[in-house]
Length: 152
Picture 1 (cartoon, rainbow, N blue to C red):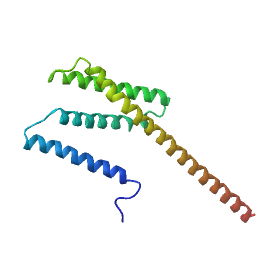
Picture 2: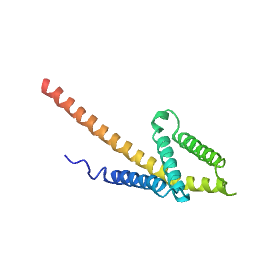
Picture 3: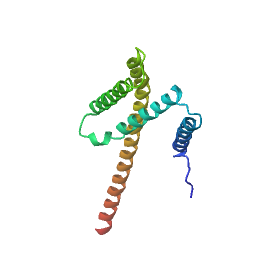
């Protein structure tokens, strides 16, 4: 039995990389007694990635709403979270005067790309599932016809 295969290879590489990078940050903080901007930025990217992935993964709960509305609300929730995190950070460190703009751009551009890839993949998977359902229905319909002619 193969645990790592073509379908999950990249996901496993990403998980391993993340675990190693997070371990490196923790180890540096403990051993070197230093927690610098690089570590903070990396942890912030991880936190924002976690938050964005969690929000995107919940799209199925809102199937009764138009997709553009769901996408916009998801983005607004996330960008509000990013701005809240930036504001909370201002109580611990001094922020650059362009910090909010920089965080907006630093989050919006990768999120837009990631969300586009996610929703395009979702549409592709739904199309494949619909095609499979059509084939199953066609097969059932053909079998039903065969059964009717056999019983007559």
